[in-house]
Length: 212
Image (spheres, rainbow, N blue to C red):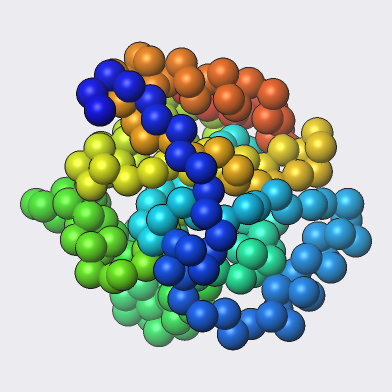
């Protein structure tokens, strides 16, 4: 409903109509590797077959490595997006293939339809589609977040998982899911409150939680 933030209770992956698992050995291996370095994953399932998981803060290249291991640990095909140039030409034939295998999908940010419309069409084309996004868009400090995830969530009325990589606790997880209200300042305050105690590898590089 408008101007109301709704908290959604996670369901088990099977309840959310998740694809059948086929990589249990990879899952166990990824979990064991994280445990060797003192990391744990907190995840209790997604609340439905489609949604967005925003990851904050993003302050280090290590975030991708830890995030990928966590993705393998929960053993679900979460997608993420990258620049279209990474998936075309020589890069696409080499690194692009690997990134697709890991869940990467290309988005042309200069296309007339816009990234939000492209992602909306992509998500609606699949019966199960959870998209992982770093709203900072860079590991360097910026004075705002990119708002694409917010407009996409409102456009398709999607649940948003508040994912985090907390180096102070060596914990990565997503356990809280919300529906954005459409009141930007109220929604941003909710994000600020939730992420206030989540610490990146380089805390000074965490971006300001606001939109342009």
